[in-house]
Image (cartoon, rainbow, N blue to C red):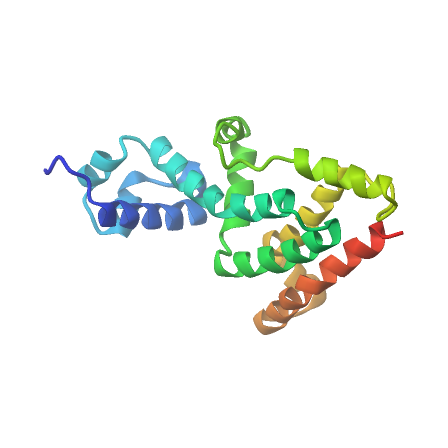
Length: 203
């Protein structure tokens, strides 16, 4: 076996692992199944990733690295709170439409292993709320928005945008919509969520 790892093979492995972890979770996934999905043998898989845990961490970090910039954008750019809410709702929903596995995958595995987030927080790109908190406090002081708690506001922004993707089957059942209707609902939420939040905090 060559001593040099091939980027294409590694990407193939990560894509295969993502599919298996997404459908079976960390505990239900098997290295042989991932190797089969990637079209390689198990020895080759172990050459790239010595254990299922290391492979899972690589997949999780890759998934979170796709989401983190979306969170950082709403927290750290120089736009107003209202602009942040509108941009986040539109950009986040568009992003998740292209990566629909992400919310469930991340939440499922954080519930399984909450300590893993402590590792993630050590990364430079991990979202930071400090600038957002200061901006909310300033806009409250200036009378632009009501006296709101910045952490609660961010949770509301995140929750209202994330929940429909996590609870898709439940929502489809409760409001009796098929796939086309659900996609229309999601498109509408790009503005519905922003309007709802902005109207709730505007003076």
